[in-house]
Image (cartoon, rainbow, N blue to C red; front, side, top):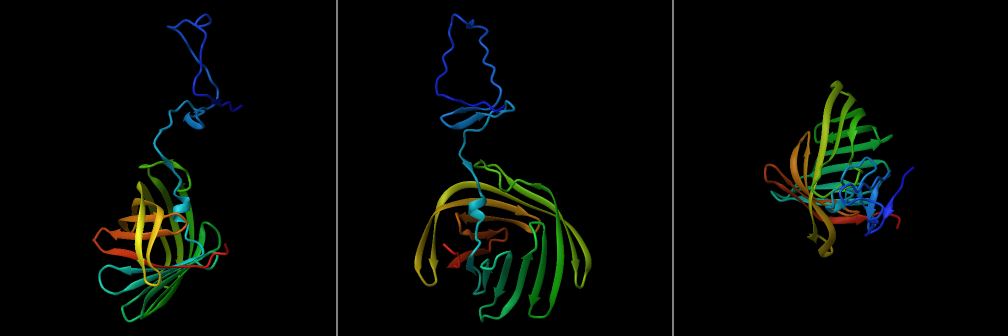
Length: 235
């Protein structure tokens, strides 16, 4: 049975316990001022700020436009259709470079349709997770990770099997200011700077609550900056 001590001061009678041999035996977790300091397994919990990165990854219902720092190419990420994600890159003349459309049939099954100037292809994929703690709150500075084996049936390449990983480390909280192409200067107050490492490479990202990624710096120095957010949520 879970037992919790909600107290800032616990006094033990000196007549009942020897000062040299005082023992407090508690089954369950121990809290001080509402915060768990020792879990039910007897492990000390860090007192550092705990963060849940899930709301900072939430961009459902949004259509976001980004500009690349080098050149005039831009990218549009569309999350306005339930269970569908579209990532599209255009050149400076608004010509399509490529588009990836992901349709999720479940949390671990999806179909990807890839379209470029020269070809189209389709992949039906299954993710076999062996680690996923992205939704588990942790102290700032700890890593959040997801690892899985991805099995896809590609329309041209046949059966493809890849081991993939995604690791995020929140470094600090901050406010983020960007210049919207329509609204001018916009300030997002609740954001976090993160380091991200995944199968395709590593980079730094700024994530903002209920907006998702607003800035990315790639390992080669190139940057992706948000310049517009279209809200299609039913608030």
